[in-house]
Amino acid sequence: MASLEDVLADIAPLDESVMNVMRARLDQLTKPQGSLGRLEELAIRLAGIRGELFPSLASCTVVVAAGDHGVTVEGVSAFPSEVTHQMVALFSAGRAAINVLARTLGAEVLVVDAGVAGMGLERQDHIIPLRIGSGTANFRVGPAMTRQQASAAIQGGIDVGLSAIASGADVLITGDMGIGNTTSAAAITAAMTGAAASQVVGRGTGIDDPGLTRKLTVIEDALNLHQVGPGDPIGVLAAVGGFEIGVLAGVILAGASSRRPIIIDGVVSGAAALLACELAPHAVDFCIAGHRSTEPAHTLAFQHLGLVPFLDLQLRLGEGTGAILALPLLRSAVAIARDMWTFAEAGVAHRESAP
Image (tube, rainbow, N blue to C red; front, side, top):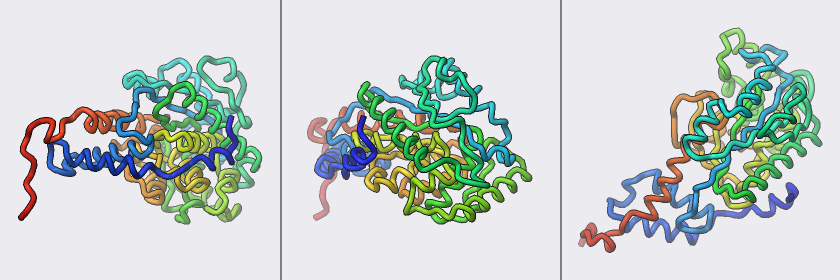
C-alpha cells in the first residue's frame, strides 16, 4: 500500500476544466439558472472531484473506525467504556443504526478495530483488526498515544481506504464508535482551530451538567498540558486524539488521493478532517459535509474548513449515520445533470437576454 508521503503527493486540486463544462451544462437545463441551488453546486463539485461530468456513485463504503479512550476515567461520558466493544459486536451482527441505513441505501459497512479495549474482536466477522493499541491513555495526565502510534493510525486508515477503493468504492463515508471520543474530538478541534475549550464542549452521549463541567475542565487541562497546535497535526493526534480518529484521517487522505468524494459525518469525523486537511490542504476539496451535528465542535470544524453541511437533522449518534443520509443528494445531483434535458433538447424556449 502507498505510504503517507506518497498519498500526500497524490492529492491534487479539483479539475476546473470539467467543472466549467458542468456549470455551462447546468445553465442550459430546463430551469431558471441556479434554481436547484446547492444541488447544482454538488454536481459541479463531484465533476471536479472525479474529473468527469457524470461520475458513478453506485458503490459506497462506510468505514466505521472504533477505539477506546483512556480519558473516560475522568467521567466525561454517560456510558461505560465496555459499550464500545458491545457496539462493535452489534455492527458485526448488522443491527446497528448505520447497518440499517447502509442496507437501505445499498452501501457497504467496514468496521475497523483501531484500538478497542479487550480481546476477541479479531475473531468476529466483518471486522478489520487494525488495533494500534488497546485504547488510548488518559490525555489529561499525559499523551493519548505516541507519535509512532499516531502515524500508524493514519497509515492504517490510508490502507483501509485504498483497499475499499480498489474493491470498487465510488464514495467513502467516515463513521466512528468509541466511548469518550467526543471529548477527544473537542480537544482536537480546539487545538486545530484555536477555539477555547468552552466553545467546543458538548454533551456527547448525553452527560448531565456536572459531567459537562468535568468534560470542560479535562479539555482545558489537556490543552494547557500539551500545548499543541495546527502546525503539527500528528502531534495533536498523539496528544489528545483517538486511534479511530487517526484512522478516519487516513481514510480521508486515501479518498482524496484517489479522487473520490468523502462524505464527512459528525464531530469525530470533523476532527479527523481537520487533521487530514492540515496534512494536505487540497484534501478539503474532496470532503463533503454530510450533516451538522448538535456538538458545537462540529460546527467550528466545518467553519474552519469552509464546509457547509447539507443536512441538519439534530443528529448526534456518529457511526456515519448523518453522512450516509446525504448520499442520495450526491446521486441526485449527478442524475439531474445527466438525465435532465437542456432547453435545446426539449424544444423549450430559453429565457431571453435583456436588450
